[in-house]
Image 1 (spheres, rainbow, N blue to C red):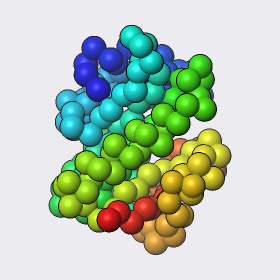
Image 2 (image 1 turned 135 degrees about the vertical axis):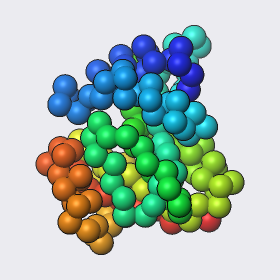
Image 3 (image 1 turned 30 degrees about the vertical axis):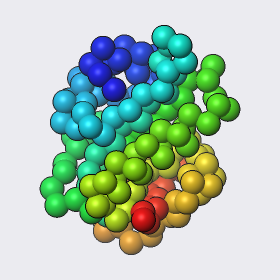
Length: 159
């Protein structure tokens, strides 16, 4: 992902998430600046149709919706936001972007990948090898509660 992709990322985000779950351009730009090597896009021709933003984190740490990425002492690649434009769904772009992220995590010798599943996406993530993680401390459960009511924290062991 590059700064020039932000307008398309915002358009995809708007098409995929309700207003309460959309993050601002300022937040997205700050995250890209903080972890440019952990942000990917997929294109069809000239048109951007999917994106994934991630960052190095710690197992059991949930980024609050709209919160800053914190990257101290990582053992995990946290997939913060994966979205595929409705016109491009069904092409396997989500799994392809996730696989790209896992390769980066393995190069960094990270043992896990984690995410917050929202909008009833738990079955999708389960098919990619993630399982619900129940050992969150109370502060991290509060962060999780800031997402939709069906949100759950999921983990995949890498390698």
